[in-house]
Image (cartoon, rainbow, N blue to C red; front, side, top):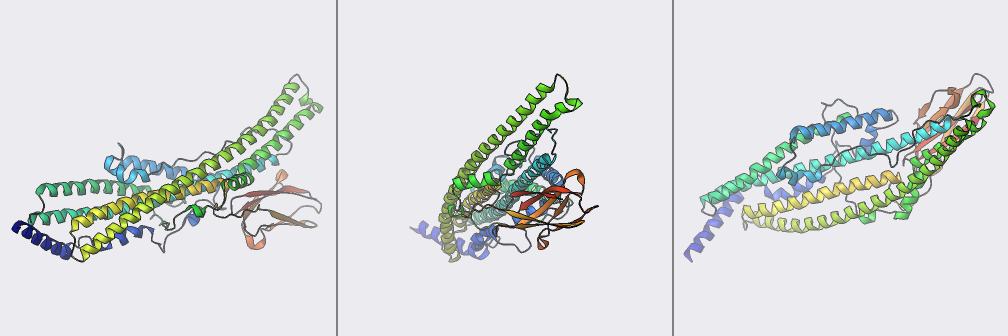
Length: 494
């Protein structure tokens, strides 16, 4: 009985001592510090702004693609420099789940690269324009992957730093417990080992992260050694209610908006034009010969091939939408489970912290529950940003948000005016829900240079002046909408 009284007295003294002097890390702020990873930052940029820095009307697609490739290589190099033999078991426990291999996505399907000898080269040019839009969409999607991956890694590093502070406090607390006879030197050694192991993992991953994050400078065309930009954490969580469209709507919208399918359509037109030109080539000297029949058969097979390819693209789009949709739903389900588990652990940790602040609990118990809280929050953070990545993957296919239940096909009107030698072209959106982002005017026979207009205030007006009053101007206006959809308007001005 006397021993129990003495032990209780020592425990009371320890609690008083720890409450008074355990200010190495203020455990009272643990929950607030941990959840600050979602706080809004005044000087940060969100994903939409970041995508515009990566690719816009002033950045050529080839340059944006090359920057993306270089940025990914820099991430690989940083990872190889700091983890040449793998990340190790401890580091993997904290960070591997958060690391994504940032590999360039292939197109949904590859488009035919064969250049047909067609009478109307504008078919090929228009198909190429749609292919460029496909590449743009892929670059934006990969940009989102990098953006969310860095936010995820940054959040995990902050949580690891808090846990490191807890382990340091735990080590000092164990040393105090030894003085009161409530712990052994073995307990101190184990606490020190835990602290040093996590510290080693944290410092290595921090070095990797700080180096890899400089790749964002490459991605937006800045000097690699410049101060990295600050990314805006996402504090809003995606739920099932955020998906407004059902799977059938998504498939229909994806097919209707698909630039891959539009490119395939124009390749069919190009192959048909080629077939016609081959059939009529017998009228020219170049068409006479024993090879004429084989050339006709080959041109027919090109038409069939282009049509079959379009069917393949459409099937692949439907399958990709279904796969992406179900994957997103699964990740949302995992996140909800992790979120519920974190809320339970959070309540326990808050109770332990309140008891510690009231002088009714020891530091070691608070640290145990605090580490459980950080571990569950890590899992929640991982799946939170994974959900956002999967949502962007799906919206890449749909070329727009999946949150709205309303879908209305986009349309645009091309207005042409001619006053003798002066010609004016304007384009206006006909759907109030979607605006025009830019209009690219291209011309047959290179009568004028290709021009891109991004000034919506002037209805994307282009003014031309021909050499003669009756000079024929033929070409296309390729209209890119803010949702990623592309509309082609042909014009023939006489």
